[in-house]
Length: 195
Image (cartoon, one colour):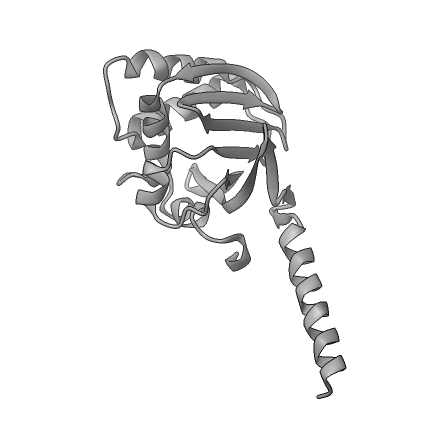
């Protein structure tokens, strides 16, 4: 192959790779952006997956979860110990009433959170109480930055919980020894290129 052709081919491969890296990931019809902006930082898609729940012995796809972070997180230990900003986004595939939303969050926390501390019950109850009913394709997000946990619904801030302890409790839901979903735990730590 001539040098000119090889250079052209290499350039085309690099452009194609860049285009693929900037294209949204699609799961269950949900478009997940490759990056999120947080103040002056860029959070990149770390991984994403689908949460399936059993409803009367029938598997139902409940939401698409995505994790964006400023640094790659590939192991549970890296995710649990990271102090870098990250954001979880949950895009619901069906509408859910307020009582169901709050019951689901409370059940997930009670069954999966392994980090506890004085004041945990107060923070847990505040967290659960902030979320409301969600429409199909509506989003709930949890942002961890600067030792604060910020809850958002459809991009609107609902409230904040100060302290690293609640961040660690929240992270243990997904990356601790009793995760909400083992499949989701793996998916959130998988490079989007491998999904």
